[in-house]
Length: 141
Image (tube, rainbow, N blue to C red; front, side, top):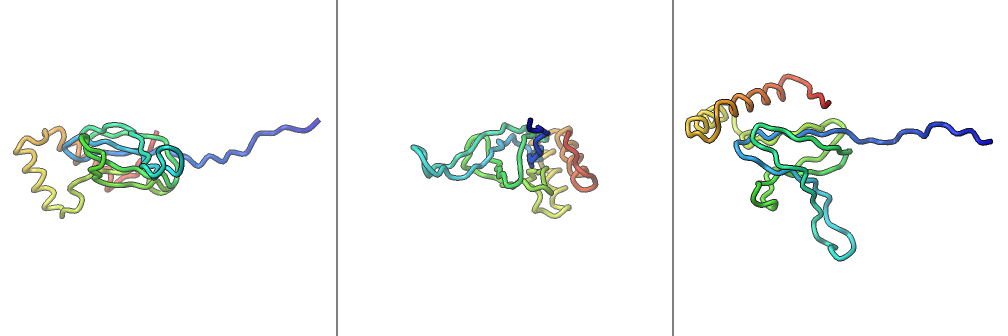
């Protein structure tokens, strides 16, 4: 009789995490590209992962090469940022202030807090995520 042993594992998937550092909720989509055949040929194939509230996060299973994008809640064609899953980068932050200098970020956060565009709790949450992003390693459980 033939000897049967365990099959070798070849799954290269992993968990990914997305953090929304903006004051508004956003939607995270998986972007599978254009459909290559059938009645929807040429159309974009996207799948809604979920809505991510301000200063909250969402996770999903992925593998290297998966592409995702963040869009406004009212229009998925209004793409705010794009991400590609790699073995080295599985945690993404959407931060509309990331291109500003540190001084301008603080100035903008002060203005948004003063104008009540976000609460002190939201601001603290954003600053906590920023510290985590800068000084620690992300672990996905």
